[in-house]
Image 1: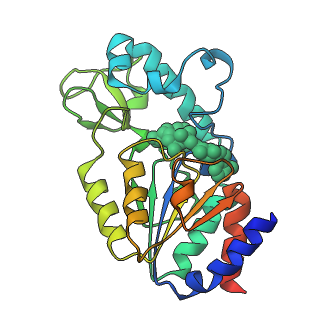
Image 2: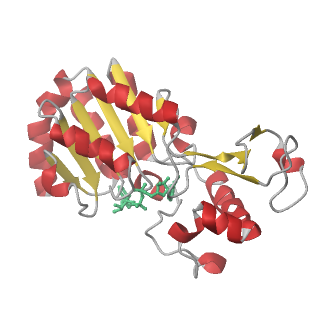
Length: 250
Ligand code: NAD
């Protein structure tokens, strides 16, 4: 473990042991060690020449629906062969330890649920679900439908992944649940997120502004929030989170 992390974990130990209510916000970095690329990492093969931020928009979909649909099909394939990693499992251990624990995630890959986390708030939807573009009808069993993308059996509009694209509103209920979970939390984690994508990043800003909340960031890189958090643990989530769980059980 890095020296600066050892020192910080020592200082954190008592706060973590005493806390009853904890929130963790996770981002793409948590799934990186499962082989799911983050948006900021270079893409490979066929997709190397596209910028994900430009494909994950409704404008891109309207301009070229098959391109965006196929990109999500490729990402869905990647995710379906990915397994939860030690970071996902450590978050399950934290949920088992704390009486109140909420996991707010920007990830759409479903790996937190697969690992066994229960109180998950999906801010950006889930790549395994689809809905139609015009009316947002949820559509089940869409695998069997023809077309790339297929059409909605109810209204005929094109199907799209049920994820939040850049420039779109977050699902209202998820945002309400996230804000509710944060209300009484004593420790707030920001893990594997660049803290650049709003409004999710605004949750962390709110936690930082609240003097009663201890804010802990886990990331191998510096982010815009690093200078303002109480503890910045530098390294991969798959390594640091299990060490943090060890602090609680030892
Ligand atoms: P991001 O791509 O903007 O940033 C990823 C962050 O993770 C970076 O700060 C990076 O330093 C950090 N990181 C990389 N490896 C790490 C590791 N092993 N441990 C800890 N941190 C690590 O991701 P974001 O902030 O989540 O925002 C991107 C948007 O893209 C979100 O809206 C999200 O929905 C979407 N997205 C989701 C997935 C997924 O579901 N797995 C993957 C890519 C993008």
